[in-house]
Length: 233
Image (tube, rainbow, N blue to C red):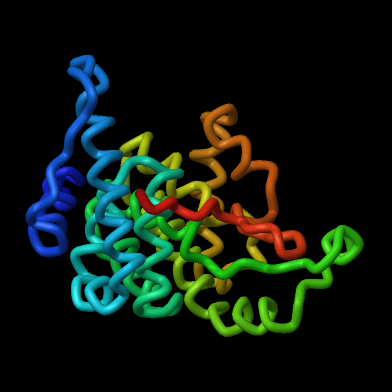
């Protein structure tokens, strides 16, 4: 069974900032309480990890477990970014790949959500460079360096998609692989066809998978920050 993200955040808080307490100006609505508590705890943990990359590195396995347990596909980046800074992008991607290969369906889906923010970013200096797909040499080099991990993750997500009947997990996993046979070794042709058949049976849910030839990626135009910086209090 997958661990609860709030329990994992509580464990990190005990090790990073045991004197911190979560306070709100007024009572929380019952249907919003869990969401608000998780958001506050996530932000506090992220602040400490940003300030203390040594602690982020020492607790990297716990941070990674928290990332894959986090169901918020936007705010999970608050933990992904400091972990990438602390231990390096390839180590984070390798950890997410391990979850995609051997985790529970919920953890596999969480790895797919986390991968979006951990993957390398292609940077384009100008709009013309973006239109003509001319990224900077440095960002292209990092992209190329991670290519094997990205291919392995694509295959892991395809495999996990076929192995589960969990519709929510499948929806997240479907963002991280394609149905392009050229993206896979020939021996996986039957698996690609099976995934296509599943997607065709629910075309609204899997519209991106059926129409796009690449999985969702990240790009950056010029010096504009791709991800908002988490403010200090």
